[in-house]
Amino acid sequence: NDIMTSFSVTQKMKSRRRKSPARTTKRLRARAFPIIEHDPAPTAIIEPSRVYKRLDIPKHCVLCFFQDVIDDLVRNGAREIHAERWETGNHPIYELDFNGRRLAVMHPRVGAPVSAAMLELAIALGARKFIACGGAGVLDSKIAVGHIIVPNSAVRDEGTSYHYLPPSREVAPHPRALAAIEKTLRRNGMEYIVAKTWTTDAILRETRARMLARKREGCLTVEMEAAAFFAVAQFRRVQFGQILYGGDDLAGDDWDPRNWNRHQIRERLFTLAAEACLSM
Image 1 (cartoon, rainbow, N blue to C red):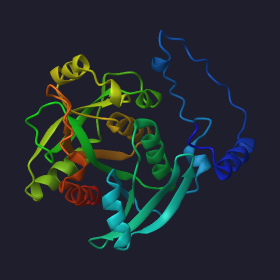
Image 2 (image 1 turned 30 degrees about the horizontal axis):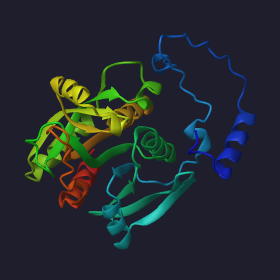
Image 3 (image 1 turned 180 degrees about the vertical axis):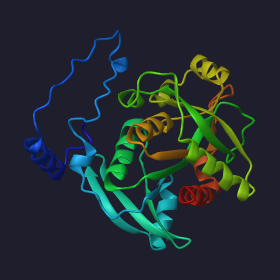
């Protein structure tokens, strides 16, 4: 919980705890590994709905991993409607008018733990329908930089999702969100691939044997957040889907960055994510 150490949040937590009645806590059954000791309790010690006051926030929210795109939105009129000051810095949420409708936009940061926390924040504030857009490493060199991939499942090779759902190999996006993404891409004449993604916490431990194993089970991309996003969304009963574009290449003899974070698809991908989100 290092990211949530601000004075204001701490005071809110103390206030809420004083008002909470005594509870009987069910003893957690020990397993071989702590990560699979799932606790289905609906309420946590730091429960977002008790920490954050609901706002008049748009119900539709795009989680955009492209800071350059967000900076352009701000220059063109997106206004800050909320900001959290955590140990990792300032985490703003913006609102903009998109084709005459209200839309929230935020950068979820990188990595499952903080991204899940940012999604939790948006849900607690009142958002309910989400599309994330970002880049991903590819496990097949034939996938060009900028090609769109839509995850229909994520292999849970990270830790955050196990704190929301019982242990399983995969977790899926909300079917309505997935359908909205595909419909939007078809309407705009965009070529895309629907495939499984590999979510991992350890970007510097993506070994060749591990990569090939994930590829054999159908993964075409690797990233650090999708499984956690899908798990949080299921737990909180909100709609969530994700759009990725092919970035760096992990399938060759050597890692090829392919200058992936300078591709022109980024602004277009945000627009597609916004359209899909507002159609849900």
